[in-house]
Amino acid sequence: MGEGLAITIASPLMAVAMGIMLRSPPLVIGFIIWCIVGGAYSIDLPPLLRWKGNPLMAAVTIISMNGLLLLFPFFIHFQKIVLGNPVSFTKPVLFTAAYMVIWNAAIAFVKDIPDVEGDKAFGLRTLPIIIGKEKVFSIAVNMMLMAYGGAVLVGAFSPSVLCKLVTMIGHSALAFVLWRQAKTIDLSDNKSVQSFYLFIWKLYYVEFLFVHFLR
Image: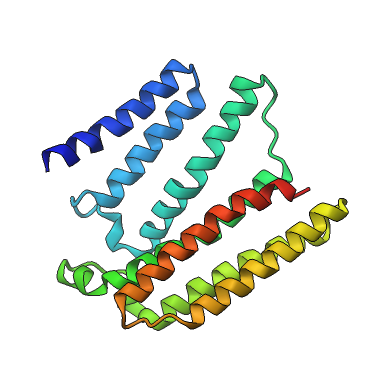
């Protein structure tokens, strides 16, 4: 307990300190917001906090912490602080932001599926409790497939033949793999759902390779 608390406190302080050492306002602000949002998600202090119990706020938290707050502060830092360029949000950056919003919302939904019994015991009203595991799982998978469909569409308009082929074929293949994997999941088996949860995180990080081919 003591070690966990020490790590929890030290980690954000070190992150903010790093931003200060680098003289980077984007990183400092991003780290501070990340800590505030993370605390609001986890701290049990109703009615304002413990966002995990609210389906909308839980999704907003995951989107913010694992998506937008990991993208824009670092992008602005490298553009403005490191390279000294004016900040310009390119098509790859905007697509990545949209992709992160959709994908992290889906991750947030899947994350709560194996926690239904525990969340019920703590009086939380997560989306799987409200509308059921099957509907939530279907929504999440379709959201991720929609993100891949958007990537294929973006790739189709790429002026580079190589980028067009890599983006369209790569995302089509990933969509097929996701669809096949989703068909094998037993929602009554928490281990099966947790395995799928870890699997979609792997797919999420694969996108950081493909984003370099967006033009």
